[in-house]
Amino acid sequence: MNTNPEMLDFLKAMSDADRLRIIGLLTQRRASRADIAAKLNLPLRDVVDHLAFLEFVGVLSQKDDVYELNDSKLADLGRANFAKESRGYVPAPELDAQSKKVLKAFLNPDGSIRQIPAQPKLQVILNYLIQAFAPNTDYTEKEVNQILRRFNEDTAGLRRDLVDANLLARISDGSRYWRVDEVPK
Image (tube, rainbow, N blue to C red; front, side, top):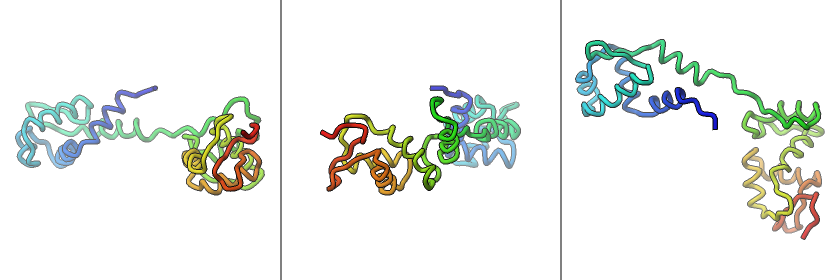
């Protein structure tokens, strides 16, 4: 897993309510540890720990035990960590150009479906979805819905579309589903 330690430290710094209160106070004025503890009604030891972490992350600095918010560093960290453009979905390289174009247009970066298209583009999305179902495996309707929910909330519609496209088969009572490219058990 590719992690960004600076981003993780920034998120950790911003995920604590007391640290956010300290930042809020320092946006108004410079303050000492004792001033911060008194103004925010926090134990001095906690304030010292929070200030040390915020100073480590770089969002504030101190001089002569007086702390000051580093506005530009806070803005830079925010921009660097959250303003990046998210990449679009990257389709498998073996797909044809038209399928890649459809997947890029209708999928979010995480592979979930942004918008369900009409035919013939729907067929590309269904071919993509069927890959989530393991060969030689029986599924209950609930299991099919769980798999499809990772991609879109319209599980009933997608399930019906997969069956109509002969990619997924089912017993008439809906108690068992399987990939069509398999021989039913």
